[in-house]
Image (cartoon, rainbow, N blue to C red; front, side, top):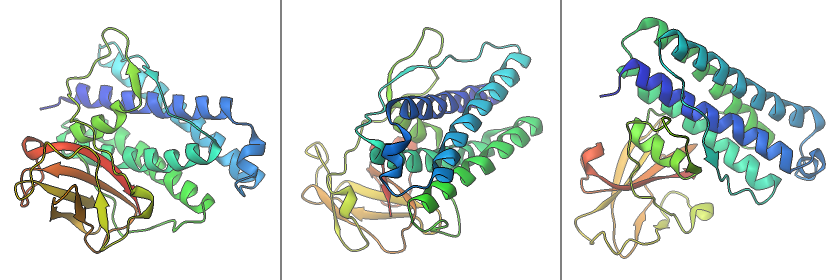
Length: 263
């Protein structure tokens, strides 16, 4: 069970990652590369402003943790796997959605109302970030009626995929699940077959894919021959895991993942 302080440190870990993500991306790719994607100058300015608000979140969380008498976790060393400006923006859209899901997932665990209020003031901004990015990419700005809450260990698994190493004393009391790679993520839609890499450890008939989105909740599909059928009703960012259950998605049933589909 995470304490309020653990949750603040977890939030800071994610905000460090997001702030460094934008800093590294804009240092690597000039405005001309974003303009080549069809983004206007004011949209590029908006993306830069998003990075600045992530840095402001870092400052606020560090102050809250210090006020609680603890040492804030430090930023880690990251590998964001940038290849071009297009891949950066696509990843930014997913990161912002993950940020929203992280805050929603942690909210029921918070006991201090002041901490909950502070988290709420950040999650609304993370949601605005994601809407802005979806709009800039000419995608539906509000793909579903609800956002989805995701547990801390699943969120940490996604964050860990970008982390190379962390300073001593900055480790969280969380362990990442094994990673999950979706081979055909760019071409997935309802009714199609999701193809997964490295599923030999998950026998047919006893393991399942779970699909979690805000509006449709969590749906399950049998894993067969390295793939599973994508259920209907999905939209926005969808969290996919391999589980040993087709009735409940809990940490003790998750075998790998999540991976994120953008639909």
